[in-house]
Length: 257
Image (cartoon, rainbow, N blue to C red; front, side, top):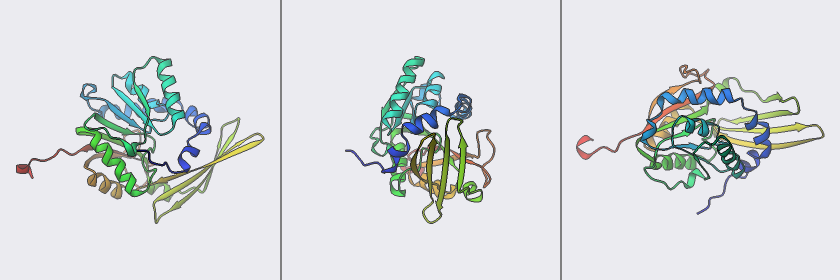
């Protein structure tokens, strides 16, 4: 079965995004993110980890180098192709595949699942819930879940309608709109090059912590910790990130209920 992706998604995450955003991320930032999550990960012998929305495999490759069995999935074939090329170049053993997480069919396979860099919230509420349900089913008992998301409260308190990024050879203009009735953040990214421009739009659900906690509970997870940034700072309304560590709840036996 094949499910249609939102029209905006393949248009936004294209070769412009690859060259102007993903390839511009400093390796030091990716390393810091991986080192943050390492102490919370299960033992590498517990089973493979699933990197959801892995992009070009930045985190997947580093974790594989640390001894974890890694599987990276993404809906964008261009990104997966680049990740496979990089794995071959670096001689790192891991698996990448084009996969819509809404159609994930595996059961009791992974020791943990990781959503780095706001890779959750691309669909309507029902399908976002389905994503969590499918991840729960794919995890082993008491499997680990990490969600790295933008903090809705911070964005509202410090909302910026427009931001410019000077990349020397080009500019990136971002125009933002937020709908509080739907929790939808709409970002129009405009790449401005000498003699031309390209526009694309992202539509991302920004859930408040209470709503996301409820989603996780409904889909079989228990939240264990939440952080507000990559330095391990406490989460509050001024945190730029909302980083949740959760675990698949064990199935209770009748005499334990």
